[in-house]
Length: 134
Image (cartoon, rainbow, N blue to C red):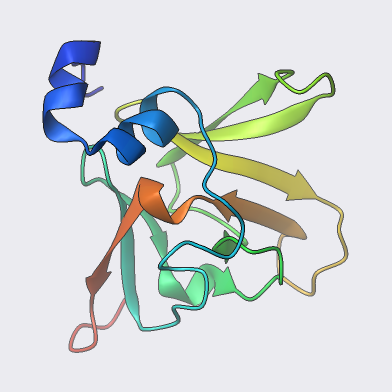
């Protein structure tokens, strides 16, 4: 696990990245750079650069944030989040513990997992893989 102090994280992340990745914030719906991004490649953690999602698992859910139906095996962890007075499932980078967003099940999307990983664009960065088969 990428162990850094909060001071070290502040030194390597922008203030907005720190707010979302380390303080579990959320970007406003529809504002993220990857919401309507569908190029082929890999989405990596913006905090530690570990691969989290491949573009083939991204879909347009209409929710205002990038949506994926599954993560790269072992890359994303889940934990209970009761911060808003009801239970949700938070998703985090298993390598650095950075907050990615939340996962929702049973919404009826026609995906292989019937899950929607609702991810903050600022929590991820895209690596183009047009030339390489994923």
